[in-house]
Length: 346
Image 1 (cartoon, rainbow, N blue to C red):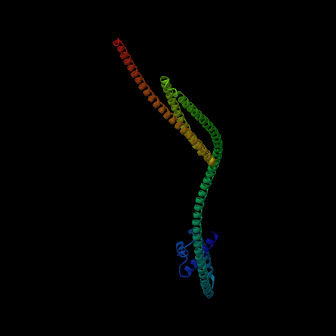
Image 2: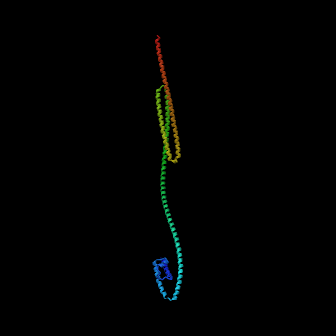
Image 3: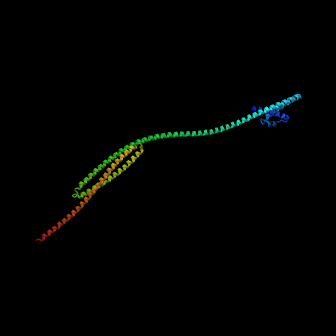
């Protein structure tokens, strides 16, 4: 650094002149004595400048030796005054420079503190920025994943909506078919129940017609009554079987209707009305079945009454047979008595 080197050389000359002025010989001035005063520069710079100063001092001393005493004294006094003035000015300048250096160092330290603070703040900001960038990267990944999930969910929702519409249409179609089947079955069952009721009534009427000649055709009527009882029992079993089948079908219908209602939530009101209509039809059919059962019970009661009448008439026939036997015995006795009387009379 040229500025620092020039200052070192100037101070080497200044210290050397001051030491000589203080009574130190030129030979006793060394590099160490100069460095102990100035505390700066390299030994090479101090040595070079001290050699140059010695050469100049030797030349000056040789010139001074040739100068007369009064002139030399005046020159020395002038040089001393100039040296003192220069030293004062140099000291003031040095103090000023040192003050400026202190201020510069303080300013430098302040700037270094500010730089360190800014560096720390910059490092903290860099850490925050890195953390924010990491968070932003994570958020971007989460956003991309959320968008992907949303797209997937939207596609699944559209697919499920399509499937739901298809299932709803299929459910409505199956429900309509089942409703038509149930209505057809209910109509067929109602018609069958009506036919059965007519058949039962016809059988009962036939039984009444047959029972009118029970006294003349007792054995035949008993056989027919037994046959009729078997038919009635078979009819009752058939009615019971049909009733059980209808109950199973009605239970299955209720299950199907409940499943159809659960599958089609939007059509709940209409399906509820349909269920109520079906329940009404079922209740009507149940009423018809109950009526048929009551008719069957009445027929069985009538058959029981007819059986009782047949039993009573059989008992009456037995009594009549016994009376007839008694009468025959009485007639036989009377005949024997008449024949015996006729024999004794002559």
